[in-house]
Length: 147
Ligand code: HEC
Ligand code: HEC
Image 1: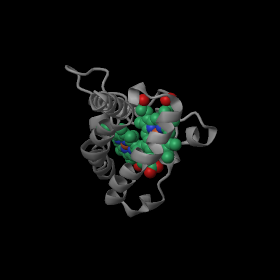
Image 2 (image 1 turned 45 degrees about the horizontal axis):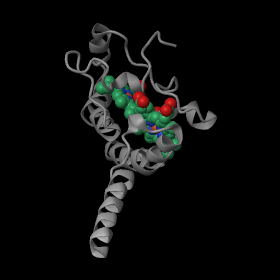
Image 3 (image 1 turned 180 degrees about the horizontal axis):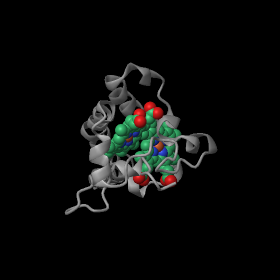
Image 4 (image 1 turned 180 degrees about the vertical axis):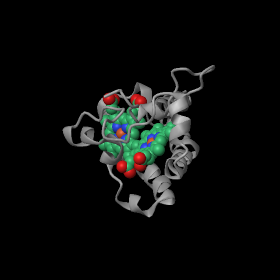
């Protein structure tokens, strides 16, 4: 009987632990302090690796590389006005991609940064049909005319 109680208590304890710690809160449900910690412990190291593969200069990547002034004023608001503005329309974007540097960067963004960031945040990737509110370039970058 005593053993049985201990066994039940142990199960409840494990279940509580599993809910409490082993199953981390999703980004969207985190409060600001949890987001801050998640960015420092998970996003920053992971994204730095991705950016360094593209260009070694990102060895010195910091919160400000994405957050701009939001990293120093503590708001961490996104999208960041300090990131390069991207064209607002599909037409202008196609024109923008005629510059090989813009194309090289946009490929890196589209193939690595965008999907990897969405995965880290556990949010759906933007899709005009299935996820119109999903994560996209404009969660980091502002578009021309937005400022
Ligand atoms: C690769 C880009 C990137 C880097 C580097 C990065 N962040 Fe973020 N961070 C984001 C994005 C994107 C969001 C917003 C996600 C969303 O759309 O809700 C965000 C959101 C946040 C938020 C929540 C803001 C809010 O309004 O709830 C905090 C806090 C934060 N970041 C802190 C940090 C800290 C601290 C660092 C450095 C250790 C850091 N971030 C590095 C991209 C980045
Ligand atoms: C998680 C945040 C994030 C997302 C999502 C993101 N970017 Fe970026 N982007 C950055 C950062 C950070 C830089 C580098 C800024 C620097 O080095 O100063 C950058 C740089 C660029 C540049 C280089 C511009 C220049 O003039 O140097 C282009 C082009 C670009 N991004 C396009 C895109 C496109 C297109 C998408 C969507 C497919 C996208 N980005 C998604 C964070 C992001």
